[in-house]
Image (tube, rainbow, N blue to C red; front, side, top):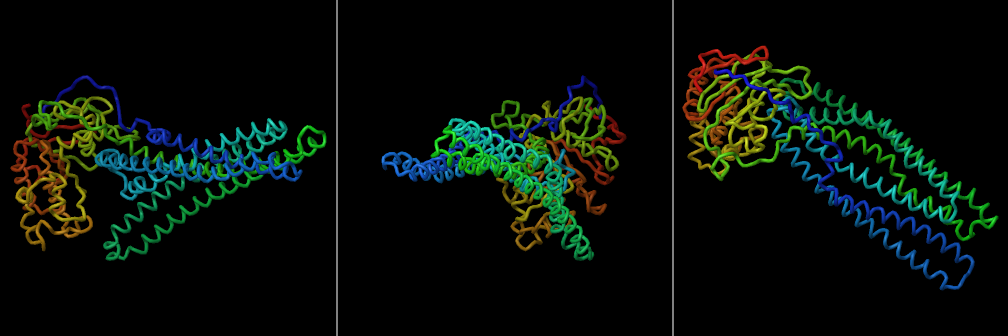
Length: 574
C-alpha cells in the first residue's frame, strides 16, 4: 500500500459542536412566543376577574345606583369568558408547537443515530439509544410546556399585579413583590438546586432500565434455555428500584419547594390585611379597595404556584436534552449534490480511498486510537484489513464512512471529505457490519432496502453471489418469506450473507465489509470470498477480517496495530 504524508488539517470533530437546550426549541420559537403571550393574557384575565369581582362585591354592599356597577359587571363577564377561551387557545398553540417540535426532533435524532451507527454511537446499547429516541426526545418539549411558558406568564402577571397594587396601596405592592420573591424565585431556585442531582441519577436510571428491558426481551429465548431468566429479572428489578428511589428524591424536593412557595404566597395576603386595615382607618385607602388588596395576591398565586414543579421539570428536561445532544453530535450535514457532470448526483467514477497523516480519536477518549495514518486504496482495488480486536480497524472504517472526523490529517473518498458529503456518502460507500440488522419482513423487502426498484432477478443474482440463493429457495415463500424478528428464520451466517447481498445491490462503488465470512466453515468461507471478489469486480473492496480465508486473492493486505497501519504485501500502484 503506497504511503503518503502531507500537511495536517486543523482538528475538528462533529462531537465538539455544542447544541444548547434553547437551540433545540428554536424551530418552534415563533409559535411558542405567541403561546406565551396568549397564556399571559389568560392569567391576566384571572387576576382582572378577581380584582373586578372584589371591587364589585364591596361596592355593591354600599347600595349605589346600578349604573355605577354596570362597568364592573361587564368587566366580570368579559374576563370570566375571556379566561377559559384564552387558556384553550394557549393550550392549543403550545401543544401544536410542542408536537411539531417533537416530530422534527425525533426525525433529527433518528438520522443522527443512523449517521453515528459506525461512529460515536457504535458502542452504545440498543436500549439506551431507544430511551434517547423515545423518552428523552419526549422530555425536551417540556422545556417549553412546563418551564418556559409558565415562567414567562408568571413573570408578566406578577409585574402587572404589582403595578396594579402599587397604584392602589404601595405598601401592599411591596409585600406582593416580597411574597413573589419567595414563591416565584427562592422556592424554584432551591428546588432546582436540590433536584439537579436526583434528576441526573433518574435520567441515567431510566436509560439503564430501558436498555436492560430491551436486552431481556431480545434475549428471552436464550435466557429461558440457559435458565438465566430469573437472574436477569432480578437485575431489572434492582434497576427499577434505583429509578424509583431517584424519582422519590426528586418528588420530595418538588414537594418541599411547593410548600415553601405556598408560605411565600401567604405573605402578601396576610400582609395586605395588616397594611390595608390601618390605611382604611386613616383614609389612605378607599374601603372598597381593601378586598382588592387582599384578594389579588390569591389570583397571582395561580401563576407562580407551579414554578417549583417547573424547576424539577427543567432539571429533567435538561438531563434529557443533554442525552439528546450527544446523539445529535453525530448528525450529518444536509446532503448536497456530488461533484461531477452527472446531474443525478451519481459519482462520475469509482473513487479511491485516501487517508493522509490522520490521527483518529473517539469523542471523549483520552488518547487517539490511530496516529499519523497514511493509506491509499486505488480505484477498483481489493484490500484486506487485519488486526487484533481493539487495534483500530473499526475506527479506520468509521473515518472512511465520515462518522469520525480526524483530529489531524485528512480522509478523502474520491477526492472529497466523506464527513461533508452528508447522506450522499451512502451513494459512494456501502457498509456491511457484523451486526447488520435484518428486518421483520420478507427476504425481498430486506434486500430492496438497498435497491428499491430491483427486480427479483437482480435479487437472486445478489443472493447467488453470496451463496444464499439455494437456501432462500427452500423457504416456504421464497423471496416472499417473512424472516421474523431480527431474521430469526436464518442462522447467524445466513443473516450475514443476506446483509452482504444487500450491500452488493446498493450499487455503491466502494464496499466496506466487516467479517463477511463470520459463522461460516472454511470451505464455504473460501467459496464466498472468491464469489465476492467476482461480484465486486470494478468496485473498490475493503474487507475487515480476522480470518485468513477472507484474505485469499485480495490485491493487498494491511495490518492495524499499535496505532498505525502497516502494509503486509507488496504496495499497490495507484
